[in-house]
Image (spheres, rainbow, N blue to C red):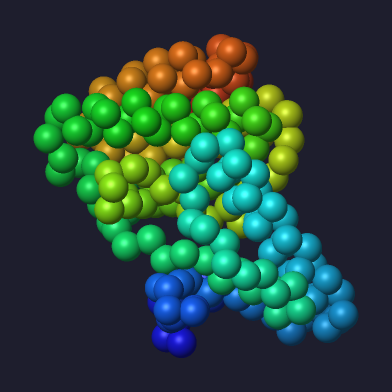
Length: 205
């Protein structure tokens, strides 16, 4: 299988699995760790990512279908989503379409957080546009199951930073993200207040 992308922690390969287009995500061994410990860490992180994806999917969040998990190789075989990243698409869309996407992004973030799922890298780089027009969330490798306000705040802060940088021409639509988040998550105000505190910390460090 061809290597699509190689990062510090994992490689992504594309290929076929039982006739389906797939992505195989393999966590890379670290030579500085004892082999047994290394495999244990990689297997645990693989298991955690798969568990979060499955739970997110059960709550109505579009994520790639997982076809197979091999903990002995720290691999996840999953559906390949054919579609552009929202990061590459958002700024060029007609305003009504971009607004609809912003509302949907807020709703998806709210569903995650209301179920105590923190994505860990909640940016438009980790959102793909599916053929049916729905947003699909990818790469839960930094995610975790937690009810911590701080971690949910950091999740949102990363998303907001993406709007301030990659989507500054559509930065006004961040208000639609926030309104949608508040509409779909009863504890949204507490998290949004924490985002403000995180932003203040960033300015004074």
